[in-house]
Image (tube, rainbow, N blue to C red; front, side, top):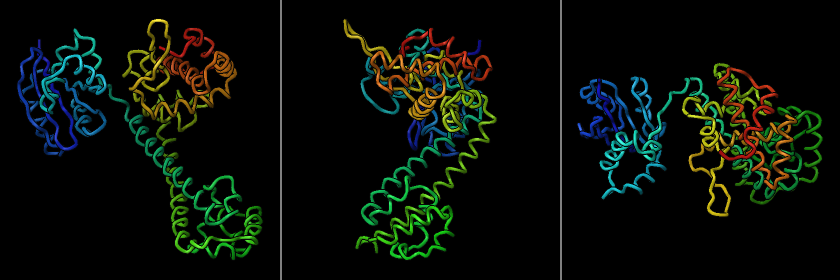
Length: 405
């Protein structure tokens, strides 16, 4: 029988420490890998010299500092395990080492390979990486980029709102949202804001998105317009923010177009988007962050991962719960947003939400309860190869009447 070669990698930003052993516990090699193309080539050359059978690699920070080393390992067909840093810290507390160094850490990871068959805490530290379909990897990158741009947009809007209130009293009252195209067209019509009160009606109507209605509003403001004394140097800052906001709108729209095209290729995204309330963005975000259901042993593990299942935290007469620390915050945000919309569209979910509120739960808690049921539905849909049907909720909800795993 071929012996498994076990490789442990303590990941660093520039240099990774590698320890290589066999299933009998013998240390075969230890060396450093520089995070360069040549360094990674050297890593594979040295491992191939030692391997005479299957290879299993465990590393910290899958999809983090180790990229693209982790991707190249999967491409070779080797088993890849992600080291759960939170559980590794707990393992070190239970079985403390005499010191802390990259070399010691790599050897501790190597210990976990040998202990994972018999020691439960060791088995939990090493999590087998299941490669996600390429389209889901793309969705992860595109939706995360979109989320970053949306957050940038929110920060700029908040900054502009404060600046407008101080610089041009009454101007902000013309619009319900700073990022309206017509309003941004007005702010960027002239680089010098002192010229905005003097714009003619024909000029206003020629601005993108303004038209007759908004031109009339602007003319009313112009009649009483008063600009602050510091408009001479603060105005260019506001102009720059408005231009950036217009650019962000275009970038976000283009990303959403690309996300829509990729989602068509992703079975997971298509299934999720068939659920009422799960639009293009939330469905794509969840598909990208989940990657592949094969990563999880059960739907309970998936529920914990996306933050829909608080863990039991009880002692004696005290009955409570706590939030798991291993939640994917991107997936949780998308799930909470979609579940809240889902409640408004599906009567069965609304009744379940109302019942949870009647039991004393807050809004977010009740939405999370609905989300917990939807996790079961998603799990069932994907495994059965079916899109959403309203009957799913009736058949699934009675099985779990609480929000806990």
